[in-house]
Amino acid sequence: MPTPVNLPDPWARSKVGVVVPTYNEADNLPELARRVLGLELPELRLVVVDDNSPDGTGKVAEEIAAEHNTAARERVAVVHRTAKEGLGRAYVAGMTRALDGGAEFVVQMDADLSHPPGYVPQLLGTMLSTGAGVVIGSRYVPGGSLSEAWRPHRRLLSAWANTYVKTVLAMPIRDVTAGFKIWRREALEAMDLPSIQSSGYSFQVEMHYRAFTRGQKMVEIPIHFEDRREGDSKMDLAVQLESALRPFRMRAAERRARREAE
Ligand SMILES: Nc1nc2c(ncn2[C@@H]2O[C@H](COP(=O)(O)OP(=O)(O)OP(=O)(O)O)[C@@H](O)[C@H]2O)c(=O)[nH]1
Ligand SMILES: [Mg+2]
Image (cartoon, rainbow, N blue to C red; front, side, top):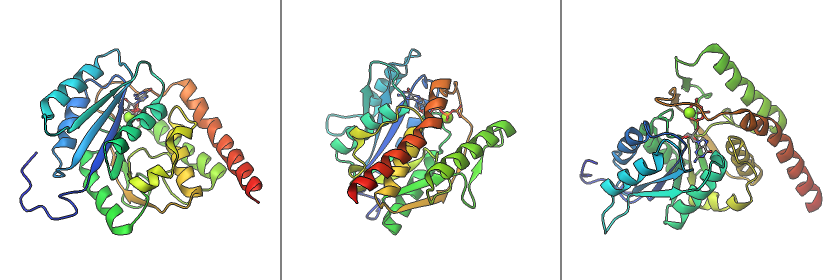
């Protein structure tokens, strides 16, 4: 990281925890870590959450940690989990670790370079200037875009998933399935992470819905979403089924809670 020259507050002292879940991302993680740790944010720390990836991502993460950590300062933490339990469970573990480590702001992003690390300062800046509880890197607000490499059927699937979730859950945001965002510590604490139900990708939707129903201020900023750099997608049938069913369960639970409160 370049030595910050007279870096003003709050940039100089904002404690940002960047949480990255990994499953078979050994070919992407070194480049992602290089770009995240190269940001001019001296109090940024990276938390990698690996589910015992067969391709050795956990070992790669340890090597990155050994390279960047000193006795005085831990810049990279690695959470090793024993089995593949889904992105949602990995995020709950990683976000909890970031909060325990003192993070004031928690970023979530994928390991495959779909979420360009260069947006992290913009997410942080927007959070600081708007006072939002969560700022979302959005593909679907003006200025947002998708990789040219995305074929029409993938664009359609993404657009359809967004419309589907919004129809069921009626949330006032454009990119309801977005996975690149920053949370304010207090907002994340109000999410009650241990009680999150989703194991897979519906984690993103469940977090948005919780933030919305609990009155958190949510702001979207446009991002360009890149195609995954290396490796394969982890989206399987079980994950897709959960993503289709979970919104109905969320809505039912919310309605039940509202009835009980009346
Ligand atoms: N720890 C952990 N990480 C996971 C799991 N499933 C997915 N991930 C990670 O979550 C992030 C998003 O998964 P992707 O496979 O990129 O999902 P996607 O972006 O919908 O699919 P592509 O566009 O094909 O990349 C990546 O960093 C994955 O390595 C899991 O079960 N455990
Ligand atoms: Mg991806």
